[in-house]
Length: 88
Image 1 (cartoon, rainbow, N blue to C red):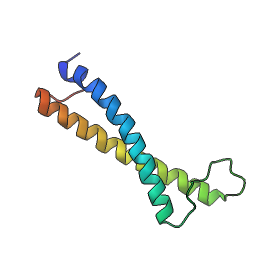
Image 2 (image 1 turned 30 degrees about the vertical axis):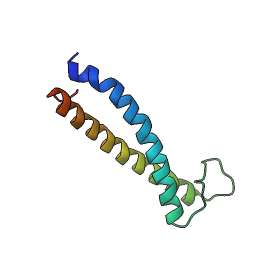
Image 3 (image 1 turned 135 degrees about the vertical axis):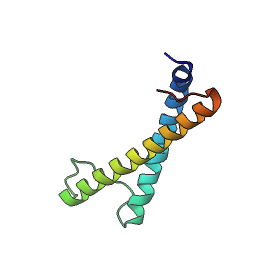
């Protein structure tokens, strides 16, 4: 295992946790902006329509994937700057 990979493990873990929290907050803001309730529907919420449940799930997945990619890429770039090699 390369030094850059070892150095990236704790950084990646911390960034992943922070990214998850940021993605959750971003999703809540977007969900409110498109005119829905403060809370996104659960799949088993009987009072919500299929369309609303599936829209919330797709939007949440897209936001989490975007944030994860941005956080992972930023973390890898920072490790390369610190160690001179790309992790992974």
